[in-house]
Length: 277
Length: 298
Image 1 (cartoon, rainbow over the protein chains, first blue to last red):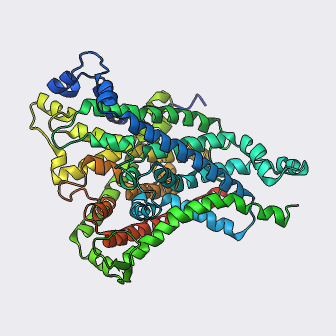
Image 2 (cartoon, each protein chain N blue to C red):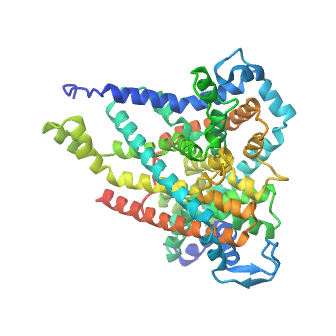
Image 3 (cartoon, rainbow over the protein chains, first blue to last red):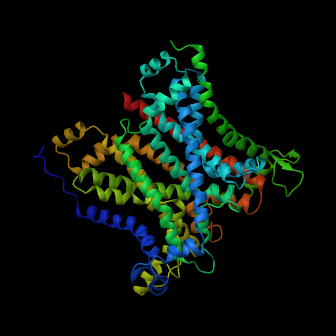
C-alpha cells in the first residue's frame, strides 16, 4: 500500500479549503468576540479592536433586558416537547416494528411526509386550530405543536433500535407473565436507550432552534428566547453587544448537545441507519 | 405464536402519535382547505367558527392575480436553484478534497461544518450584523480599506444575494455530510482498477467517482430543494422580506398575507399550494431513496 504515491493536490485546492475554513469560522468568531467586547470599543472601531474582556453585555442581557424568563420558556417548551416526542415516538416505533397490518405502511408514509412538509404551510392552519382549542399563545400549545412536528423523526430514529431487540427476549418476558406494556417498559425501552438518547437530543434541539412557530403560535404572552433576541433589532440602531451575548447563550446548549449527539451516533451499533422498507 | 390478542394490543401504542398527527397536522390541513374554499360572512373575521359560504376557487383566483405571489414564487425558485447549485459544488469539492487528503486533522472537518449547528435565528442575525452599514464588521473593513460604504440589505438586488450567501454558509455542510458519507461508502475496487490502467486523479474523479456518486447526489439535491422550500426564519430575521418585496420568498409571502394583511383566504390557498409542492417533492424524494436503496442492496 505504501508504494502508491500519495496524491498531491494542486495548490489551488489547498487555498480554496483554507479560504473556506476562514469564511466558515469568521461569523461565529465575530459573534463570540462581540459578545465579550465593551460597548465603547464596539462603537469606536467595530469588530476589529479588542481592549479586554467584559461581561457587561451578559449583565445587561439578564439584568436590564431580562432575557431569563424567555430563556426559561424556551427551556420548558424544548424539554416538555422532547419528553412528549420521545414518548409518542417510542410507542409508535415499537408498534411499527411489531405490527403486521396494512395500516403499518400507511402510517410509515404519513410519518415521513409530515416530517418533510414545510412548517410554514402548517403555521397558519395550526394558528387557526390552536385558537379554536384556546391553546394559542400558551406554553402547552407551542410544546404540542413542536411535538407533532418532531415526534415522527423520533419514530424514524428509534425504529432500527427497536427492531434490533431480539424477539426471544420479548417472548421470554411474556412467558414469565409480563403483559406487552410491561415488556415494552422493562425490556424494550432499557435496551434501546442509545436510540432514545439520540432521538431526545434531536427533538430538544429542533424545538430549541424553532423561531417560526414561536412567532406565529405565540409571541405576546409567551415569548421564547429566539423571538426576544430578534426583538433587539430596532430601526433606530441595534445594540449588537447584548444581542451577540444572547446569541452565545442560545448557541451554548446547541454546541454542547451536538457534541454529545456526535459521540452517541458514533457509539451506536446501528449508526442511526434506517432499514429500508 | 403471536396471537390476535397481542396484535390487537399494539393498537394502543400508536394512539398517542395518531392523535397528535390527526389533531395538529391533518386537522389543520383540512381547516386550511376549508378556509381556502370559503368566505366568512363577516369579512374581518379570521376565526373558523362563524358561518362560512362556499366560495369555490375565488381565493385561488385572488392569489394568482397578485403580482406579489408570482414574484415570491419566482424568488423562491431562483433561491432554490442558486443555493442548490452553489452548495452542491462546494460540498462535492470539499468532500473530494477530504477524500484524497486523508492527513488533514479532524478539527478542520469539524470547523468546516460548524455553521450547520448555528440556530437559524442566530445565523440570520449574525449576517444582519455583518452587513450592518453603521456598526457591522464589513462596513468597518470597507472603511479601513478606503472603499465606498456598503449597505447590502437596503439594496433590492444585493439583499437577495446576501440572503443566498447566508444560506450557502449554513447549508453546504449539510450536503457535504451526505456526499462525503456516499463517497466513503464507494467500493474501492473500481478506483484501484482505474489507477492500474493509469488514470490520473482528474480522470478518476470525472469518470469513476462522480458517475458512481450519482444516486447520492440525487438524494442530496432532493433534500436540499426540500429544505429551500422550508427556509423562513433566516430571511425573516435578516431582511423581513425587504427591501420592498425583494427577498419575500414564497414562505414569507404566506406569512405576510396571513399575519400582516389578514388575508386568511388567499393565505390558506397559498398554504395549500405550498403543501402540495412540498408533498410532491417529498414523494419524489422517497421514491428516489427507495430506488437508491434497491440499487444498493443488489
